[in-house]
Length: 144
Ligand SMILES: [Zn+2]
Image (tube, rainbow, N blue to C red; front, side, top):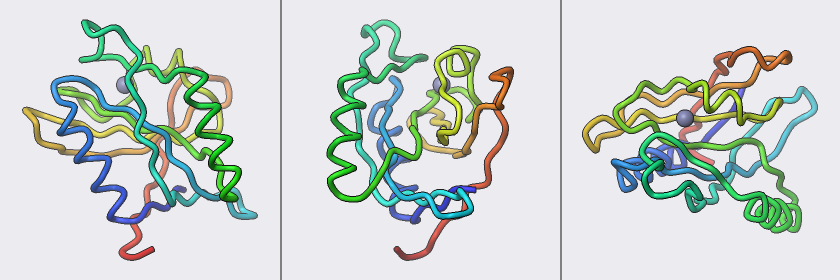
């Protein structure tokens, strides 16, 4: 389960709308409690490092950018709990490309943006054997 403040959930949708028809992408920073459930406390929008002709259906975050985000998060007692990106005119479900590039444990939030409007937002986690994604429950917090 992942907890996310309504404000940040809205921010992901707004970013997806702003990036349309390309994919937006970013890192979710937060905390992990003793039971392993995650709370998002901060978003770090990232540059989509895919070449321009590919950004409408793919995203990539450079390893250097992830490392930088991880370092600055650690300085604030936070860690990377997952990643988010948008699917312009496609369902909020991971693509084969997403699965091939995903890492275990992290939460993957995907927002469907249809004709510039954010629709569904869903959270996923890679199965242990990497064969597929499993839905992860997203709990929206009304206030931080
Ligand atoms: Zn995707």
